[in-house]
Amino acid sequence: MMRVVIISLALCATLTNAGQTRNSPMEAIAYVTGPMQADNRQVKGNVTFTQNDCGQSVHVRIQLEGVKEGKHGFHIHEKGDLSNGCASLGAHYNPDKVDHGAPHHEVRHVGDLGNIEVGPSGTIDVTYTDAVISLSGKRTIIGRGVVVHEMEDDLGLGNHTDSKKTGNAGGRIGCGVIGIK
Amino acid sequence: MSSNDVIDISITHHFCLFCTHTNTNPQIEFAVQIRKNDKSDVDKLREALDGLGHVEIDAIEGRVIVQTTFPWSQVQDKIESSGRRAVLSGFGGESAVALVNTTGCVVDRTPVQGAVRFTTITAKQAGVVVDGVVDGLAPGLHGFHIHESGDVSEGCASVGEHYNPRKSPHGSPDAAENKRHAGDLGNIRADDTGRATFRFVDSGLEIWDIIGRAVVITANADDLGCGDNKQSLIDGNSGERIACGIIARSAGILQNFKRICACDGVTLWDERNKPLAGKGRSQKL
Image (cartoon, rainbow over all chains, first blue to last red; front, top):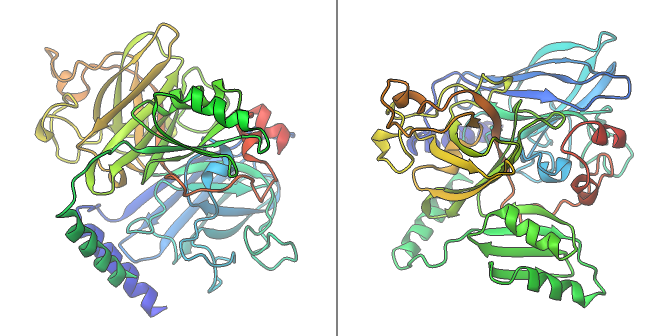
């Protein structure tokens, strides 16, 4: 774990030298929208990311409406290219080529942010902190895609063959590109 | 990891002292539905792409790679004119795409609709290729700029001002760094049908620096800083923002082999035939 921290700090410093200086804290936003659902609801809202400095944890605030009650997989994909839907978005952002997992697992994709749990109102406003994603350096999530899935992410623990790859969370009900705020 | 990077850089740098740049046109990769047992498909493709540049066709993988200065949209049209469906699956080296529409986000079709792609020229050469197609514009010139932010939560209004890290006045894309905003890309021209197709190189931009920001198309032409008023040195009197899109990471050639979505079983070709968003898509979900 210590080694990971040192490496990410080193990457931050390298990029700063190359001229990519940003005022801290760094902020990013994905405006998430989805198609009209059968029940005439539409997923939309903001996901904002705040990182106080290079190498520090990222605060993720998820504010959405129009989401069906229950748990929904929530992931960052490698690309933010929605020109050909999920095919051009690529896989979950996974620079280490490891198995899919839960946000708190030692083994997980960088883009595995787990599930959001939505109540009967269909709206959600939660903030949590993730120590793996970053808004700067070689592994920045800027320009990548955020996807909210139809179903629950089984966090790599299911019996389905896709469990270790995608969490088997079904189709997309909302997506957006992570932009600089 | 970091020590490997250092070694990498020193080797390539050393190598480049002895090399010259020759053909620097980026390659464009398409997934194409080539029938494996029908050789005439390949022949028709070759015929359709004749004169566009260097063409590689892999019938087994269903892949066509073209190295060209023609806009990607025209290459795609040529491929599809041979009767085979094509999807752009890789663009140059490090690349990005902005899906441009009236709202800046993925929604039902809007009056203005387009895609602008960006890629590095070569790994060692500064600058980016800007290659796009936009429909639904009034015929004539429209200002075309990169804005500092990629926040479309309030549509095109929330993407900030022209990207201007050097605090320069607004100007022409051909002007010196201190006489233009980095994001000043001049004008694009829409034809009588309302379509603008364009491809140019901007030597002042870097792909890593524009990813996560937004492109904006304006109602009026950009006077490139030559107008007679103060506004000319701010936005070239280019008027209202009529369409925008976030510059998102996309795949370079041979980087993305994904043909089917594990999550919902939708294939590349299903996606090709569906609108980018909206009712047609939701019926599939």
